[in-house]
Image 1 (cartoon, rainbow, N blue to C red):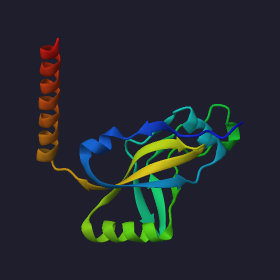
Image 2 (image 1 turned 180 degrees about the vertical axis):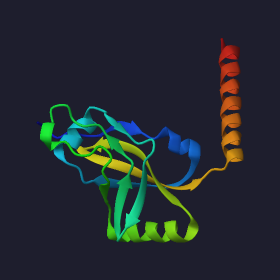
Image 3 (image 1 turned 90 degrees about the vertical axis):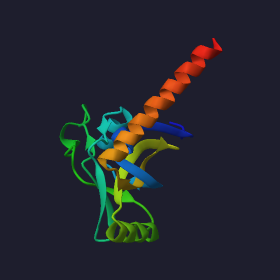
Image 4 (image 1 turned 90 degrees about the horizontal axis):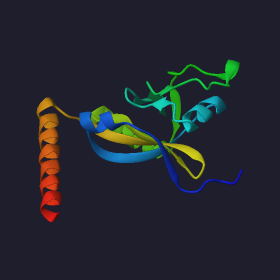
Length: 155
């Protein structure tokens, strides 16, 4: 099978953009088993309730649900097992300092295939409060209304 080129999105965490302000984005690899990769390629993954944390100098993602592969039988793993993320040690140390001192959270934003390899986009996020969420919803509604009136005016 030839090597695939380009980026193919598999899953997105839209809830993260509703609940957090995304300050920075990082790309990291995942340490997965074969049946997990096959299941992800079929799109059977959920990032909604997932988060990342740094434990003993290593980056882990928790709460990411990968459904068992149908033909995987005994080789299937626990769908909610913690998965190790692959990143440079210096980047992990930098993220550890930011999360510990400044109250940031690491949230998986998107899972995609890049040149045939599974990658996870990790966001360095700060939590939104209720009034921030309301402001974002109001702004989105007004922008939608403006676009609608512009389209109607052009007809």
